[in-house]
Length: 103
Image 1 (cartoon, rainbow, N blue to C red):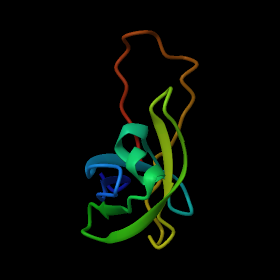
Image 2: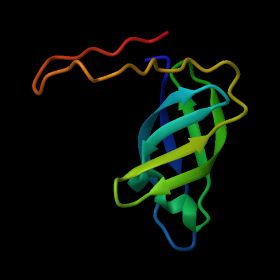
Image 3: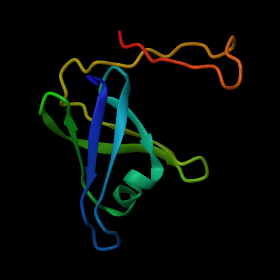
Image 4: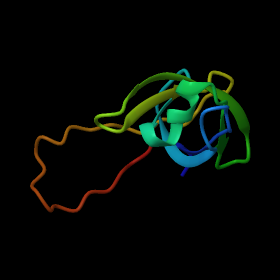
């Protein structure tokens, strides 16, 4: 839960507001999310993130890929975000249960 954020993208002249979630995946405030959540920011809408502890911060769009529906945003004002621990999936089998661990 500490690495998960709620993302709110405001209304712009070209888009409706949207809400979604993302996860801090790298220090510096980098958040991985879905493109469809933040697509409005590419057309001028603002982004705000809410952390599980109630902290709120503005974010900016770093990059997005509509084809794979992935995007990266950055919330640099968040102090010491909890980052998810990424592991290798090389030893996993299709259908094998998996649990995420936070560092």
